[in-house]
Amino acid sequence: MLQPRLALRAIQLPYRALSLVASRPYSSAIQESNPPPADESSSSASFDPSIAFAPPPTRDEAGVQLRTYTPRTPGIRHLRRPINDHLWKGRPVHKLTFPKRGQAKGGRNNTGRVTVRHRGGGHKRRIRIVDFERRAPGPHVVERVEHDPGRTAHIALVRSKDTNQLSYILAAEGMRAGDVVQSYMSGIPEDLWKSMGGVVDPGVLAARTAWRGNCLPLHMIPIGTLIYNVGLRPGKGGQLCRSAGTFATVVAKGGESPQKDNAVETDADGQAEEKKPLTQREKQKLERAMQHVTIRLQSGEVRLIHKDCCATIGVASNPNYQYTQIGKAGRSRWLNIRPTVRGLAMNAADHPHGGGRGKSKGNVDPKSPWGLPAKSGYKTRPKWRVNKAVVVPRPRNQGKRRRGYN
Image 1 (cartoon, one colour):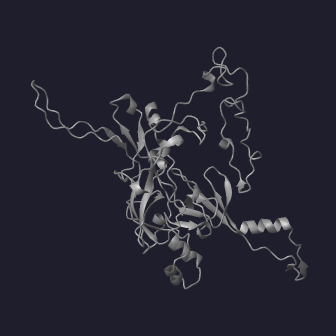
Image 2 (image 1 turned 120 degrees about the horizontal axis):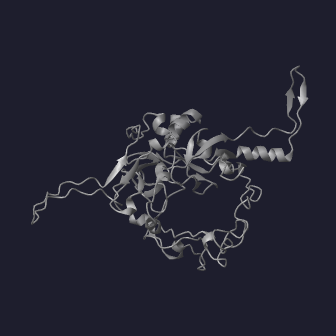
Image 3 (image 1 turned 60 degrees about the vertical axis):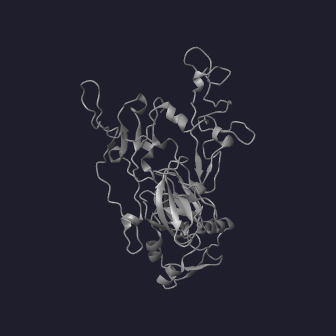
């Protein structure tokens, strides 16, 4: 990581010259228009909604903190990085990592064929073992927050108060060293049961458990809460909303119990009316709604997730990652990203768009390098891939009009 240049001591030169004093700083920070609030560690003694429920990240450019660098070389003239001074400066815990070796770095599968293009090279890395499932009960203390080279969000090193076991979890925005997080995937603790009098009180349960960084089953999370690291199957770890600054919103939970076939209702005159029995399809739909929770993703897609799947309260850390500017092509090579060549610039034998004189695709529809249609909704519309868990699909084009299209 580039660091600010230190002050140089005065040097005696053989000719008359000015002594070298502290030079200008090598990097500068673009300050936020509104200063962020003071860091406060969450405690279970008092409930503060501003600490427990993390707000969504800011979307305006004025509210983003970025670090710029003095253009001493062309490669850092356009370099922009988010300011994360709270990250750990040392190495990770060695026993929680393993080296990234073999065909995975070059985009090859087990037979040696390239399955993912534009991968190769890159700096030597160690993959961090992140606990996405978080089955271990009891309180865990955040030792530090670290940068993970294999993902855009940050990870937090936590230590269990009961067993002193170390593990990595996906850090939430605003999580700092000293915070206490807990997982309720194994059930409600005994002390929490006693504090509620042995009866589940939804209000008390939400106030005591729905804190930033806590991992809960979806049926225990209040409606309207921002969550990340959402699971897709019971018993498995989180798979959705794991990249930097992503989150989902709990929209609805469950439904009414299925009605009996011969249910009797009374009308306005007080006369009994036999209600029409439910069909088998309606019963299955009601039972499915009872077992699932509806969440809305940032893309606008609405999904049904099983109520026993895991989710973490808050927003994934490092939300300003989207404003990063790499600055030069070499930095992409360090990140294991190889160049991407346009098909238009290739020969006719290498790509369907190649060949011809000048800039011309040969009057053919957009295609992939293997000749499959690449646009016009081919294999991208919901009718081609039906997912029963998707209630409302992701909107196409997001309401924007491109140049040249009506």
